[in-house]
Image (cartoon, rainbow, N blue to C red; front, side):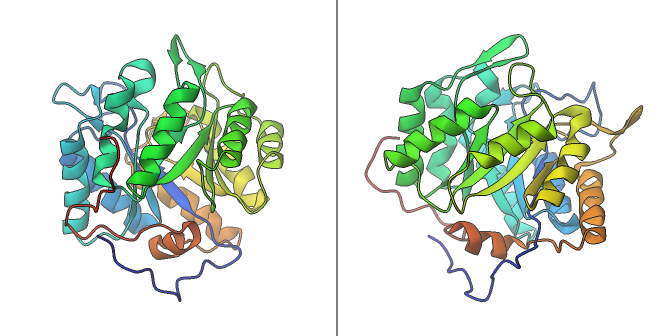
Length: 299
């Protein structure tokens, strides 16, 4: 069950959507002690990112051993903690499952919670020493289930072939406008983190699509700056980059969001609010604490 989006929540033309990717599947406290891994830590990071200017928080969850998990109960716990604190931030749940460490069914399990957004990794890619498999049959089933549960896909593309995959799914009626693309550049196996690569990906998009960029490691800030200059949107956070600057670990996700927000102000790009994002992307609205209305379909 959802609440209606106010019609007045229109997104100003130059507004910037900041997404905060708080945890990811792989960063550990051994690498940076500020990486949130428990439901309470992840929820706290999401709340503080919202306060710093992020409209969307991208959530992964971990088990008690700090390993990636797709457990819907842990996702629900994070969402409940965020909402009980009064935060209005849009929650985007991952279906990535740790890039090759979870089954297809495990990866799709969080969709039963009916999150407003969930990741849709739009093709297979070498991922460091692993292979992140997103087969055509998996993508079709993932798209069907997202429609079933009223979830907006965040179409994640690691290289140009993934955009082409998305265009075919759009042609087949499996992905619906308004489209929300997230370009992930700098993964070892995907496109390199270069502005010319970003421009090429943007040029491939269908008319009217909205897009954001996620740069891995030290590419996070330069690509974010490029996206701001190009009229796109930005993802930041400890999932993609545990450093604030060379030799200095980031103290929090909110610190990274605050930097993007500060630069956006210098560039004359006001920050989008969560409700403006909901209106722009046609999201169902904030969760009310009641079970989602589930249409007949696979679980």
